[in-house]
Amino acid sequence: MSEASPPRSLATLRSPHFATLWSSNLVHFSAWFAQLVVLQWLVTALTDSRTLLGLVGFVQGAALFLLSPVAGVAVDRWPKRRLLISGRLAVALLLAVLAVDMAAGTVTIAHILLAAVGIGALSALLQPATQTYVLDVVGGTRLQSAIALNAGAIGIAQTAGPLLGGVAIAALGLAGAAGAAAGALAAAALLLALIPIPGLPSRTSGGRWWADLREGWRYVASTPPVWMALAACSASMFNGGLAAMRPIFARHVLEVGSAGYGVLAGVAGLGGILTAVVLATLPPLRRPGLWIASSMLAFALCLVLYSFAFSYPYVLAVEFASGVMGQLWMVSTFTGLQMAVPETMRGRVMSLVFMVVTLAPVGNLFVGMLADRVGDQWALALFGAIPAAFLSLLLVFGWRQLRAL
Image (cartoon, rainbow, N blue to C red):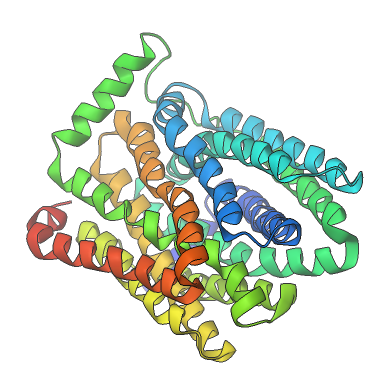
């Protein structure tokens, strides 16, 4: 880079239409994290059962898990901008309906579970489309910088969203906070209409869906670096225990209330923001497979450290570290895999990434059940130790394949 050249991150932001995409994603994910705080706080207000709290994440993750492969086929067949606008508006509508239910005083756990299934199904479509559309807008040479900046928007949202959600609950009540999040989600969807790039698929529609599914599975199975990277990502089933247990630690272990809960999630987002800023200025990471597995291992160790929870400042420090590791995993995964696989496979491979990542909310049910039996801190410690052992073995015995990604 010459002295006159702008920093890599600024050059990417100046790419045509990327700033609009980035702004849309910032608003979308801020509202997304805010509604998560609203729904989780609603569940803890309706019941003290950790199992039921985990069940909400489980049904959402199950819908995501089951539909992700089909969503990958859709992303490889249909314009991504259209998928994103339609899906985001549908999520806003679901949340608005739930807000009306809250305002009427008729909301139940069953209603929340139904909404979680709908949101999970729509997320299966949105997630691979969101990541692959970035490449359509900026091209391959700026992909890591764009993914990092996009991840930075998610990090800002992870900080601002929970804080805004906690403040909105206090100021507007649960129903008002849910309604505000629904409005923001709709606005983010409409911003995408300003981008003239449709994100056309790499292939035309036609043929049988299940044939495309089989083709994607065969490609992954025959490419060891890809399936080993996906195996590392599957550890998120346990690593997701942090998100499930965070409101429990805030309410029952640390006793810091809804505002303190928002700060906990927000500090993790701050770690992600700073990491994204650094990665956006760097050239593409070499050996992304090793980065994927190593960052997942470090995140798992954060869960073990979190479980001690002997003071609020200590937990805030662990939250920050978890945000750093989570961001490093996100950028290395979404950049490394998209650049490693053929263009015609991007949607399907990304959908498989999200399929295994959605094991995180599936694991929420089990960490909740475990917490009801052995206690909150022991449950989180076990959910960190298990993936840490698995990922250590994967790195020891599979490092050559991971290195080849």
